[in-house]
Length: 618
Image (cartoon, rainbow, N blue to C red):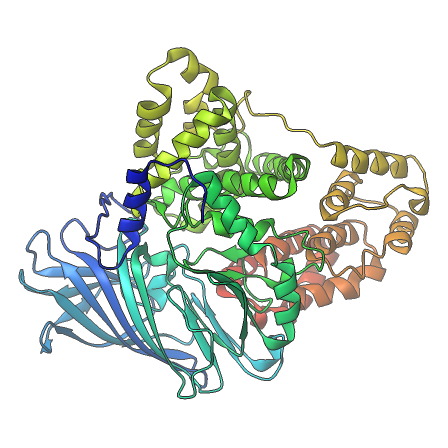
């Protein structure tokens, strides 16, 4: 049972909203989304029925998408988002063929699929196939998996890549339920962001149902050789067999995380919460697909020191999945809330000191991001203007960390008790809705600030949401544990041999802080001294390894070049790959090394990472 001080009426409203037999209570307002060709204010998709065949030989998904629509404006055209899809035919209602037209492709947006419908049309069925190069779909050879024996497929739909594998209204402001039938090779298992089976089907056919309405970017599919480990009756982990034991041990606190989250902000509304560990080419740390988080294996540190990422993806079950940003300009509503919630989960499970370590490290990363952008850059606003730009441009530490510190500022201004009560009500009253920044700010004023001029001034909302950089009232968080690591770094810089530093019992976060306090460029003897004492080059912790490899590049520590090559050819997580390539291309010699490594590594990267490095090495 969960513990919550929500009123009974609010608890019932959340569960009613997610129950498949209940009336859809979604109140999404169809705001203008300049990243979508869809016109949901005219005709909106309410349910998707998907039937796809997975062909590893051709690297294609093929079949049909049947869309149940509500023709609000009694219009004669339905507009869908597509990108690089081959449309074979389109049918209406009772197998009536209809005409369609694909618009001229627009960079990163794809093409408008305009389908002729009638004012009475209820269903539209599109028969289609994907491109072998579909940006959302990663086809991995057996050699690119942990097991090395069978192929693997996964999708990554955020932000606007769902349209590369499904014709739909690809906007976070449009929510729909879905069902699916996926047919794959009989020796592989399929899972989706839906209700999943946990056993292999001998015929290779899997049926899925998602009774809660979700936005398109949360559509997800994975096919591979994986097995399942259950923690309890509502949580567990999927992973390749060779990885499963390690993953199961790493995420053992998952049931406690779910319980802690519920105690904070109300009942978990999605049924099950499972984690799927993907191969290392996955471009992100995790993706919060409902019911099943897709996670990178780079968090399998062996000591559970990187599980805050799982807390982050779990938190998305409230902020992002339950209450969604209506457009990508409002992305901070998704990630800022989630980082704040993640920190609260970690504090509840592991204590305030531990959470403060994470916060201090994140503050440093945010400050570096603002320095790189420039503190007057409009991209450092929380609310963004991404018109005519790829929404990936807005997926920086600004949305995540500046958003988190804004919410922390509010908490400190009003007190945690009032703030928590506000958030519980916010999640309950906006469940299964997509909202804008303005809607949130209006709700914040109505429910918490009450036009209190002094409180408004204390929080400084406009500076946080619509202004650049970090406002002067940004909270200052300290950590004694990190201060110890900082002291050790100062001692090393002043000549203390690495072996004489007091580092016993340090965790990952202290090591990261230590490495980040060292000079960007060090002498070879300093690098050798550190490596001999702490074995950084051989580290199996991806976070520590990445920070050390940055020093390796900047210090031209040639003894670490082999490890750099191996790391970049094995890990496709953009968080690690991007800064390492950026550091290499800073010098002519480094750029040549980067190009040589990328020739070998590129085929193992997801399109998201690939595009980033392609642009960098032009």
